[in-house]
Image (cartoon, rainbow, N blue to C red; front, side, top):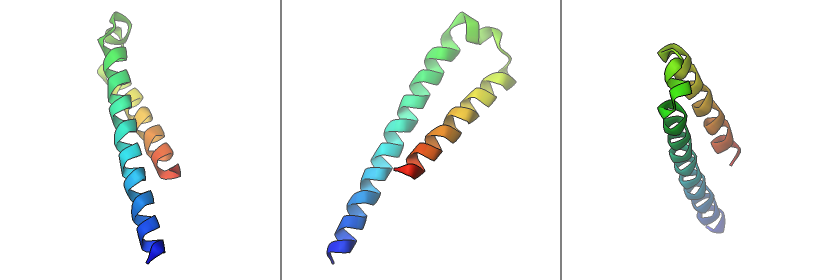
Length: 64
């Protein structure tokens, strides 16, 4: 029973951490893409940067 409670706690914490990481990534992507420098970059490159950020955040979330 204690193991089930501990697993539930860890799973909940991991989900919360994933949510925070996603919000943080969206914030930074928004800041970077609102600058004049980022607006010079093609949409394809911007999409690649966002995909890379999401991949990193997924890997960090899995590690948690």
